[in-house]
Length: 277
Image (tube, rainbow, N blue to C red; front, side, top):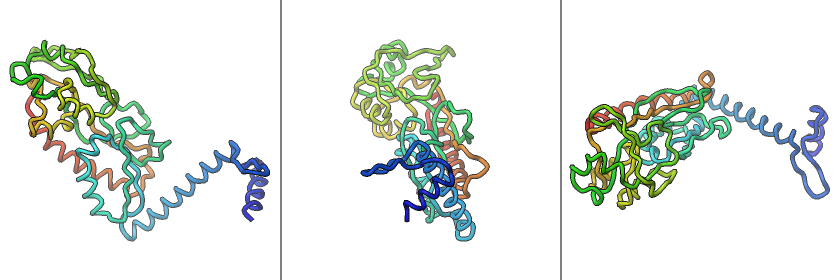
């Protein structure tokens, strides 16, 4: 029966969708494209059904989102937990990656991004600004005079984050207003910022990283801040999404929730940080 339906569909379309042999069936190129388009249509129908159902019985359905791995681990869980408690029929599919995911190809509803946005086709909602800082183990530079010695710090081995989206990477503004490059040798590279934080704690080198990644090690005395009176680059924290006009109510609700909660918590974080950083 399935074969008859498939043959009828191919006849109606005037194209072969499946390549048949005596041992196997495989999709043709046209069949692959038709299957992908059909799945999108079915997903859109499911979204419409969930939207209509949600308006009567509260928000429901799946939200797919991508977040930077370190930010998700260190900052995001409490905010998402609040949303889940308020909307128990919503399921969050949270994917973590320091590299930018493709919202269309990966079928994502939204993403949180830190740094420069390369894709101008996406809609963005600014949440706040993330401060950067220079950090190292106190075993490397164990007194305040050394920690503020720009010439000494410029020669220190560096731990480089390879997934950075910052045009001001390893740049600081000194007390005279001039911009200085921290250009010592690179001892380790990684696209995992949490790995580099652990390497900095171990005393391998100095780290230029978002301030939130070093909050706990700073409190525990495992890291110290360098060049405390110098300016560092600030990065935008933004929510991005591909479709502004036809978002399900649950996605709009999550975007609004994140924008409100994260903006508030981020303002509190910045107010507690040392001046100049």
